[in-house]
Length: 361
Image (cartoon, rainbow, N blue to C red):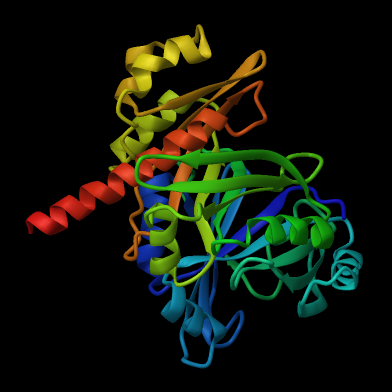
């Protein structure tokens, strides 16, 4: 089980154009490919979005019998497939099945003018997600021969997102360890971090699994037993089951990225109360000015000689489920143990704020 990172992510959505607007206008992606029933799969339409080394596929069902119809009815818009790049998709598929993975699609070869694409899919241990294994024989090959037609897109004014950093998952209470074990058994991922958070109102248990390179990475969270229902419970209720809570994108300049997000009117989560007053004593000296970080709601955590900087968006989805993270790493490969707590508190604050507004209304 050797992977070369995340090849792409596929999201099932209720309205293709509305979903593309969020990613293109709000996050700077551009449409580079299109699949319609006449050129791709029957019963659905898809758009390929790209930025940096990130590829996203947005798929809308067009008939009631398409599996995406049931997914959207149950979960709303969400991440269906976290596809992993590998040198041998068929071998990865058969090995995963041998280790206990549920097969979804047997290996299939797609021929294109620049080479072959081999694709196979197994079920994820989490909810209705799946993992496709993708083998590309030439870097310049089409994204998906026979399914996607290229779209001539204007060169972007600028790109500020570089790659997928991680995909964070919310789990049903009591399933964290078994899910960690399942990813280890099926995909060979190892547990790298653990952080348990308890606040006045709620709490969560969290662990991170990743491959040896760190390019395939899943932080996982479950509600802490015996606490008031919190933001993870809210996600599980709105999403109607386990799934991807947020998608993290790597950037090279977090402050520039924050400016870009605000120009694009992408709403950002507020930082927890008192966060920046305690920051200097916790992380030491930084290249960035404290007040600039505060103004951008940028979270910081120290890791050895390096540190990382993170900012989170509010969810703009109808069910308030999926949201996004932008992260800059300065010689840091972790996840900011203190920032895991800060994120939990930020989302909790947002949930309580909406509850107050609803009660006043």
